[in-house]
Amino acid sequence: MNCVEYHLVDVFSSRPFAGNQLAVFPQAEAIPEAALQRIARELDISETTFVLPPIDRANDFRLRIFTPHKELPFAGHPTLGTAFVLAHAGYTRPHGPSLPIRLEEGVGVVTVEVEFEDGLSARVTMDQPLPSFGARIECRRAVAEMLGLAPSALMPEIPVQVVSNGAPLVFVALRNLETIRAAELRVDRWRRLTEELDVNGVFIFTTETEDSRSTVHGRMFAPPLGITEDPATGAAAGSLGCYLLEYGLLEADDGWAAVRIEQGAEIGRPSLIDASLELSESEVVRVRVSGACVLVGEGKITAICAPHDAEVERTDPTQLNMSLG
Image (tube, rainbow, N blue to C red; front, side):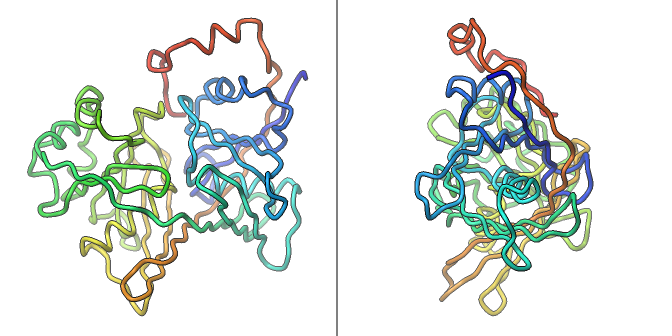
């Protein structure tokens, strides 16, 4: 095998060079297992996906998701962006005004709908797994120091807590835009504070926003994934919506609640993520997350196997110099 093609797409943006980058390999069945992580490391963007035939014929595709450091059982913008690429590139056909696609992921089957807007962009919506609430971090001073902030920067009486829908994150509420813009993750403090927690990163947010139509302004840091700062975190959106609802920062109306997250401005890749929560007797029973996708380009990987495979696999990923494109 000499080369394999991929598509580059920006997710949670309707224009190129914003949102969150994603590389999609729509025909990955011939790529050797040992090459998947190395390809993601070589491309060095937030996530890279590899599309495979489904295990269950009732589904459309099987999806594997890699950051530069590790494989993930689920992630938001890779799920949406991959569905968009599959629809745009003709790997599946529309059925009516929107195209439903069933993707097998590590958390189970995720259903995605693609609504075409023009030849290069679309609105994509997915059903996310319902999140669960995990451990709280009680030492707020330690959390503030981890972010390079004073303890007063944290929103009072809102707990610092792990919430997970397959992508576990620590959620931290901050007072205002000034504090969130000043935040700078101290990786050494992060490691000490989360060494007993199995989490992918920390999502910080404030209810003060740049756009009056937004609900929160957010940022996400993910040292374990090799992501310095994520411009748009789709997996966080559903969990964040449930977190906001749980602690009185969001209200439901007639069994529904909606969240719009603005993210990525601090790193020059502005993004918008929409989430909707369906409730039954005050319990969240469905979480949907949506955003725009736009095709940016295509490429080929021409070196799939190398004689130093074993040596590369022994490399400690924590020693690699990772940056977010």
